[in-house]
Length: 359
Image (tube, rainbow, N blue to C red; front, side):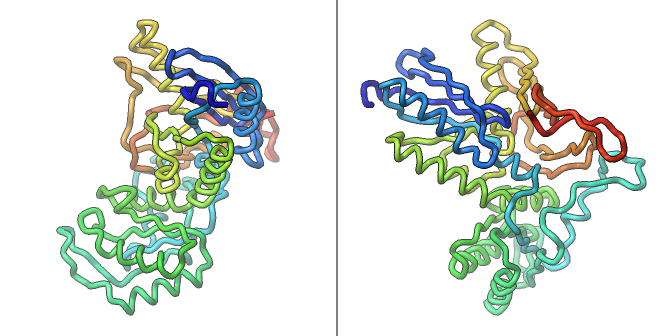
């Protein structure tokens, strides 16, 4: 299978179908297009079925797989992330619950907001403090580090987000805690806010770090399993589409899963921009109707419109609940949980609802 090692496989896993497109990099031509049903229990199975179907029909070697995935999105929407802890400066334990004043519906006196991904008893306060300048006003003592590590162990979590006050200026305390946890609990997924989102605004930075930690175990397991299966098939490289439409390595995808939340939709908008360029339409509206969801984005001057912050999982049963802010570049789009295969149902109150389940 080494006749032409210039084939790139584009793999898009949707809620209903998984698509595999084979591109000959040398000539720029499409040599195969394969569609198989997605496997909801393990999306990697559907991806590998499509890859194997290509490999069984063609003697061309594959040098890389470029993959748009919804694993991070689905983990967040379905609340299937692992148990997560949050380490934060004393006095800032409830930042996740307090959010900001900007409610989804300003004059609603009983708003429904997205619940925190970390329960209050797993939000652990740390006795250390920095000034806004980054100067240490309360040192992080070794005794305090040992206490926090013991508390994390007792919490029985799979991942930890560390978000200390003003760590975007000075990450010293976050790094000390991260290193101590890595030594004491090597199987723990640890996210430093200063690593994943080195910007001010406590709620947004905390939210980004928590989302990253919360979805880390399933995303990491998925990416590593897919990479191992591709390696078994002598496919050396796996790249994942990021929320901004670019590509990142498998290693970076495991480290920064929050940057993959809009991976699948971003790939579609980027493809629409490329098609518009070829056809002479630099300004267009891109509409992607899948089996489970529908997405709309805008391309201006040949480039998808980007945003530096977006709210993931914002709409639940048609109600705006605020979602989970993520400060990371992403294609600016609107997504609703209703697609071509969505199932309509009547809930207990007699209200007709459509999606997000697909036939």
